[in-house]
Image (cartoon, rainbow, N blue to C red; front, side):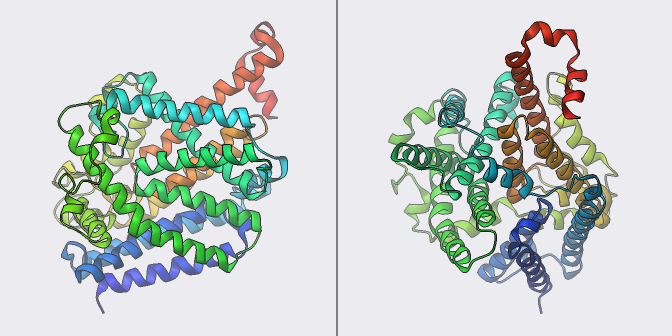
Length: 477
């Protein structure tokens, strides 16, 4: 049997067994368990799709290289499992077990983290910042937030945009929780929730197919928690959504983005203002419709043109036959890029981690689907899959613990952090620095929210009598 096909089937089987053991008991599901899902999608189902559609493995890698790729993926999952056991056995003694439901189920019990007015204000902020970035800088669809565009923005706009991304995920999670608990009683409240979800759907649609998948994943997770057990109708509805996703949403997104990027390439930053009049469905302007391509061919061509996570790791392994590993340089680059630009102005002269890896191994400088697994392999070879699993699991555990700790004072900040973590895990093929940026931005939002809370409660004069650190430590005790 073909090596790639065999390993893909083994991985899918492992992921199905693991997830089934969790979904039948949703209360035991943790953030770390969710990492199995994108691994199955990216290295299993995606590879199977390309194999059956093109009748070959990706880029014709040798069986030896494919064995290394999937061995690194299995080592990554072994590391995740070890960290999960350590988290449940060791940290639970100190009442700090990272349980995904500890935050969301609290919201079920205590009620919404946002009032109607709060939902309107947060949604208004998210929509306003997205439209402002789109109208003035052309940054709206995925593929437009390039390094050049982001570094050319004032730093406060970058931070406001990143805060908006956190709030979007928090609002999605909050709305799904309210809907699953039948909280939208009354016509006006149902209309508010419906409109909010429509706007959030459009925002995630513009971010790309992976973020749209994360949007649906949050809804299914909350629904699963609310039921308390797995039901067959969840599987049926997920299959229906999956078919809609593959045959309608993905081709539609690629179609709209193709027109948008084509107009943006002319140098006009005001494309979004004219976007409704660009002839999105005009066959003369759109190659997808003029060539009458099927949805599956559109998806396959997009995957092959951009390259997959499997092909990027395979390229690294091929290059390591003659080039030594980076020995931690890639991970150092991630942490350097996580430092705020205001504290490290020189970081703008650094190469992005993806390009740093490509330059080190002599690979073409093009957009690739980088993952934590690729990062670990670039640094330490095949054992890097295991080290990447340890690092990402440790970071997720720490961020999850932070979310649990801040829930008491700032529940929406906690929901925003957990919702963004879920999205990052589902997306998976994202720059590793994003995970550190999530923690950095959540901490900044929590500090601002906590200061507002202190000012409202005690006033500025009382606060100045004791340092912020003393106040924070006493409050957390």
